[in-house]
Amino acid sequence: MGHKFLEPIQIGSQTVKNRIIYLAMAKCYSGMDGSVSSRDVAYIESIAKGGVGIVIPGAMVIDPTWPSTLPMQPIINDDKYIPGLARLTDAAHKNGAKILFQLWHPGQVDYSGGNPPTINEMTVEQFKGIQRQFQDAAVRAKKAGADGIEYQMCHNYLGAQFLSPLFNHRTDEYGIDTLENQLRFSMETLHILREAIGDDMILAVKLQGFDGQEGGITPELAASFAPYIEKAGADMITVSAGGSLTGVNVMSGDGTRAEGWKVAASSQVKEQVSIPVCATGNIRHPQYVDKIIKDEKCDMVGMGRGIFAEREWVKKCAEGREDELRYCISCMNCWNYGFIPDQSGCSVNPYAGREEARKELKKDGNGRVVAVVGAGPAGCEAALTLAERGFKPVLFEKRGKIGGMINVAKVPPHKEKMDWFVKYYENMLAKSEVDLRLNTEATTESILALDPYAVVVAAGSNVAQFPVKGFDAKNVLQARDVLEEKMKLEGKDIIVIGAGLTGIETGLYLKEQGKNIVILDFAKRPSLENAGMGGEATMEMALEMARAEGEGIVIKHSHKVLELADGVLKAEDMLADKEVEFPADYVILSAGIKPADHIYHELKAMGRPMVHKIGDANLNGKIVTAVQAGNKYACSLF
Image 1 (cartoon, rainbow, N blue to C red):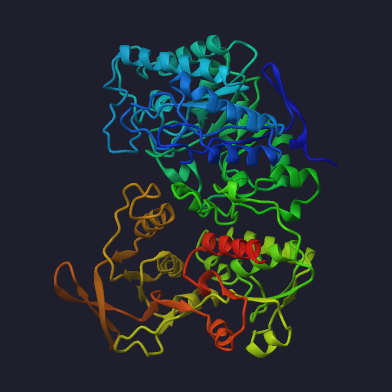
Image 2: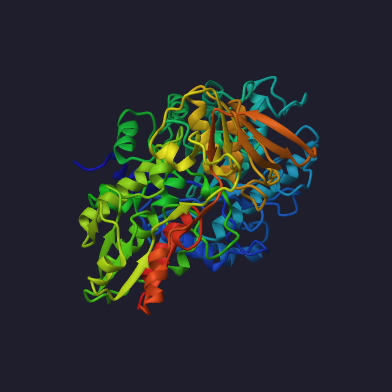
């Protein structure tokens, strides 16, 4: 029996081929002047090729002079942008997808330090001016050939700010004393948009299902908005939640919540309207998508990061290849906006945001043997891609299972989704021509016995020595050992050395055992401002630090470790210029690793040609850098 989500659906005057929507995700791929770039076009083309019914490019800016606009987004405030926007339309249409333009105004969300006015400070005349900008942008969308537009009433942006008691404190006819006043700005805007685009284009609404903070929009309140939205002329409603002002991890779940955790909100909205309703919320698995549609909790399903990670999600499901899906693991790497053209924006997809680099694979391996040392993400990606090219990869893994450091990364609380990526590699290796040798540690002898054409070392890293007096004691452990062996530790007071992601997540793992956790780091504390937007901290780091400190973990930066003796760790507080002491039943080291590259050096010393190293064996990084390194190596081998 086929998937329910593959059935067509009528939205307004248009028939959409299936019920999967690629949700708008703001990506910094456009030119600095807001013009559509070749990177934008390749990105949209890749999404559409994967089979979605509708693709929505993220955040089309209607007012680039607003003091807080995101950089490098497509701009739609001038006719000069229409030809470029038409390129996006063509990229979607030639690959069988409908395309909606999301018309975007941030309101008081501040991305640039520009101190934008709040809706309480704006005059009615300013509102009217913004509505005229929406109207003009809608006309340009029509001229660019879009199939419809999406009005943003979600994610704490302008439309949602009028709806939310957290932001709207006006006392005039745009206040929240009545439902009609609360909705007035958006209902006026929707009428203007419908008049601008006519009846032949889709008018979609992205609705805030809940704010994620006490006193804000609730699912019940969102459901009460829905009949007004339908009456104003909307053809469909997509329900999401959260935002930059009330919780980034409510907008884009960071793995701490169950699949489909926003579906209850879309279900309540659906009960109030007759137009199609689209659900969102970390939705990943085909069986779950079918279930919520069949159970009438929604009519369609929207995926952002799920499709960003797996472009062929729809295509693979249609072809019965569900076991080949690369599921999004909710790592938040894609929140580190894509200013660097040749760096993937997704941990599991080496081409996310660098679609132009994807070329047709040369099938010129001709059975040549390539030895791959290490079955972590770099080694697995390299081996599978080499096999696809017709090489004969022999993949050595000293442990009894593949995955490398992912098997450590998946142990801390809420990191279970990491295992989905290991399962993907297990499925693909089983279907491939890769000669996988588990429980087999590679040596120069075993590699040379293969007489390989090339050798790639992806053996990961080893921990480095930490030269501190007392750290040779039995109660000093390595973080990766604690996690991999899922240790249960005695004692109450635990010091973690190193406030990187692994150190913080080890602290969270041990906090679940009821321990008192202090994390020390020599470096200064990174600013969490503009996390993921070129600031000092990545988005995942900012979220993990906030979670750890919210759970009572103490994180102290600018501390130099001095000595461990008699259950006490001594350190220098470099900011206060004084020595401090911490009780320590255990000390966990998460600071300092070195490449596991001895085989590389041995083979190079022997004069072997075509020997390379990738992943942590070359340079310490994250899953995203390992996967991309494996892919690049396998594609470039000649």
